[in-house]
Figure 1 (cartoon, rainbow, N blue to C red):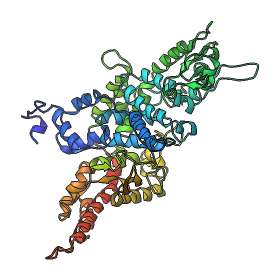
Figure 2: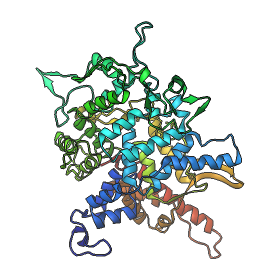
Figure 3: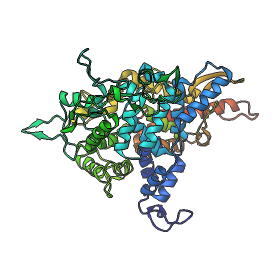
Figure 4: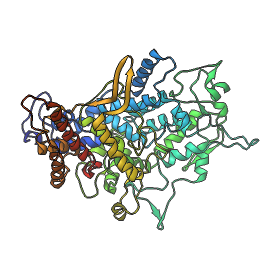
Amino acid sequence: MLAACGGGGGGEDGPIASDAPATREEAARFLTQATFGPTQADIERVMRIGYERWIDEQLARAPSSHRALWEAADRALKASDPNASAGQEGVLNAFWRHAVHGADQLRLRHAYALSQIFVISMVDGTVGDNPRAVAAWLDMLNEQGVGTYRQLLESVSRHPMMGVYLSHLRNQKANPATGRVPDENYAREVMQLFSIGIVELNPDGTPRTVGGALVETYTPADISGLAKVFTGWSWDCVDTSNGCFYSGTVNGQSDPDRSFKPMKGYAQFHSTEAKTFLGTTIAAQTTADPQASLTAALDAIANHPNVGPFFGRQLIQRLVTSNPSPQYVHDVARVFADNGKGVRGDLKAVLKAVLLHPEARTMSDTSGKVREPVLRLSAYLRAFPHTSDTGRWRVGNTDNPGSALGQSPMRAPSVFNFFRPGYVPPGTYAAAAGLVVPEMQIAHETTAAGYVNFMRDNLSSGVGVYNGTIDGVTYNRRDLRPDFTAELALADRPAALVDHVVAKLTYGTVSQALKDTIVEAVASIAIPAPTSNGSNASAIDTAKLNRVRAAILLVLASPEFLVQR
């Protein structure tokens, strides 16, 4: 432990870094924020090289590809049935495969956070019918999420699945003769949700007031002006003919990758009118130029003073704490404004500022966040080794609130995500204290019972889709299989077993009183004394396994696990 504090050390990485955590619990807490769940190997790595170098190391890793996994699964299915498809399940399975085993954990975790800010959803019929493109969307977030905010905003705005979801794909200029006006959906949401929010903010994220009144960031006129920018955008195609604009096809042929290649501008459908919004005016164009309009508009949005505190606060909420202090938001927004090298919106620098801020590295009465259901399952799967019978990580759809998680990645009910960043659960101590708890917007009696039942089932039967016979192999069991070897070795010592499980799941936040209660429950499961001829070996093994399952389930159901401190 002295070495972990900075003294001595050595080995392949040289002396232990000066910013290395002092305890394994501190390392695990950091990894709970920066990954889909701490593992022993990652804890040891952080303790050796320190927080900052670990972040740099992670951000330098090649991004995992969800599309590659989806395509591999699709090819395998088509080999036995040409009409089969990996479908939405292929997207979910790719997500879980990378969440559990991806080497670029920080990039993946960051991309998942971004997917809840820049939302598309497979609940939408058209988006759901393009699962390969949704997998590519996740890859785009993973790749662009470590570039600049401005680059990310353009990639989001031009992605066909966002164009489909918020209806600016095939959006057309006004036609006074027919009364047609540009679709305003994306113009509104890109401001409200993806960049500046609805009220002007101080640099620390607190609302700016004039004469005691909030100041709106935009008006209906701003939406109408900006909507003209998003006219004339449609499928990537071989030319800019009307046929390409409307259907993405020429002579019945289309680019098989059109659903995720950036949309292209079609001048004949783009508004040439002056476009005024957010104090910016794009002059009327003699010749329609969709790209010039888009560049000017996104530059104006990305440079708006609200973006740093608005975006930064949401990233803090998704990774670290639901209620960051104004100072925390201010410090992150300052890095967004300038990374120290004159670059605005450097997302690597912003992510580092979020995770390394003193407020992120310490606990207080208001620190932390409720662990959303997806992150509960990912923490469990990473804490206890699992393998996939099929190799496809068939976790599948977990939407059902009564029998599953009540949440599936990339299946938010609307563009507002699963929960709003400012949600206050009514009638709670949090509300009385003036705190927001976004994740509680999807928490209720059904989800509380459903989660415990779901995890109990996972512990007893494995995780995911039930496999019968696949590719000639008979499984007749759930796809993800746990390995509890380390826990079974401690089953005859309840206190040691509970300490072990607590360390894996809660980084030392469980009180001794709760541990004592869990130990008592685990010890109440009697392990038979072995018979002289070993005839009850199976009963002994079953009792030990039940002890392990009980210990894990009781920790998974505890407030200390459900709240990420």
